Figure 1 (cartoon, helix red, strand yellow):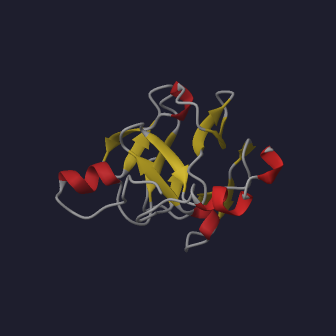
Figure 2 (cartoon, rainbow, N blue to C red):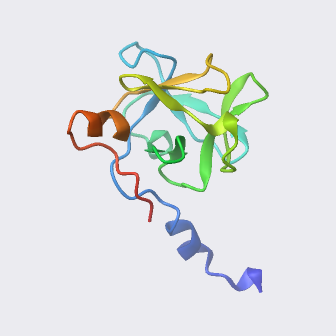
Length: 140
């Protein structure tokens, strides 16, 4: 009966509700370079010019300390084999946690070599501290 499920409705429910933003690998959101973008689940990320491609939009859930692609919140930013950033189904493991370490920068407590910077918009946690509107942590 799984095949009878309305797949389109299921996918729509995983889209982020609220403001999304772009991410750049590293600690410097002002540096030149490309933004991180989703290719598919269980894949390494690709890099695309920063500018609004849907695959390069992210949301942050401050409760779980996880970044999700805005187009599919069942997936999480993930450190693959201590070597690369990718996207994998969310499991809450330490390799999917990114805590705020400085303004608009989130680093992994699992391996602090892995940091991402918010390029467009502000992380929800930082924005709330300043009393500004930031990305919503609510998911549809």
